[in-house]
Length: 389
Ligand SMILES: Cc1cc2nc3c(=O)[nH]c(=O)nc-3n(C[C@H](O)[C@H](O)[C@H](O)COP(=O)(O)OP(=O)(O)OC[C@H]3O[C@@H](n4cnc5c(N)ncnc54)[C@H](O)[C@@H]3O)c2cc1C
Image (cartoon, rainbow, N blue to C red):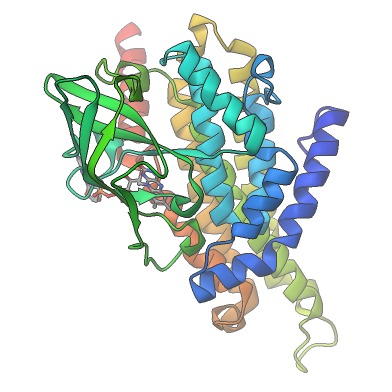
């Protein structure tokens, strides 16, 4: 199942390495959830194999992973530790997106890439605020950027949901400017930057998506990396495929747990383990069907994006990029639910791995793109088709 989408010997070798790490992360992921810890050692292990530089372009010293590869590795990583996979997905996705669209000054992007390649520096966007809700819906940041007389800015505000907050070296902070909105690249350690450990959710606990607090943070003028409205975010965001990859990874992990259980569980009403009963067979059949469709959809869209990358026709994939997320999410929720049914009440024991996957998988509903917006987009496409009939 893991190798189904491998296309080259290089991918096979990398997937093997990532898969070994992912499997070794299972226990740490459990502890992160149970004891509210952050899995620093998982991040370190990923740094040791150079994973943070996988989507840095080759000319900047990275691995230049394609979208297809990015999805392949992320899905595998999520099978072992979905929380760290989501955080790494944001980091790698930001770099993929910056390489694709080049909205920053070249020197700033080059310096960030260098830091990622040389020491595994980590970056993420801090775009959400309590007052905005999901920034994907166009909420305006309350975080302010006040221009200073001698140049530079003073930032003040609070960002919620800053995934991987304990280890981020850079935060891309959205803030209100006098005449619009801007994005600032803020380094960890800058005076006035702190993390408020607010993340206390019922799932994806290991993401440590705490609040980022900015109190009178003075940054130089170059820290304003982008200031022209939201134009570049309105172009396709293929890097967001790391989200369906992550939640399908959780579904694959749930499938494995259900198989492990069904193979070994034999109540004395049966002469064999429950794996060989028709009712359990039906559930597994449905799981295979759903996973196969969702994964083929995901990998087909990723591959098509790579083929069209840099060409105007790529914009035609926008509805499909959103549709994949929705389809994968519904699949992941349904597969985890079926795995829970196979295992029965045993899966609800606090000590059972399935109950964590069951809690974690729901979080994908609240990662972008948002379901109603994506469905509306698909609906608009159908209306346009109708107008051409
Ligand atoms: C695990 C996880 C990790 C995350 N990591 C990051 C990160 O690293 N960086 C970051 O910036 N963000 C991050 N986010 C935040 C995420 O992108 C969303 O911004 C956040 O979850 C809030 O979106 P929401 O839909 O949950 O809540 P809200 O946007 O507050 O929505 C709540 C409800 O109101 C409805 N609603 C709200 N606004 C509208 C509207 N305009 N029109 C119609 N309905 C509306 C929604 O449909 C929903 O039903 C993360 C979220 C999660 C769950």
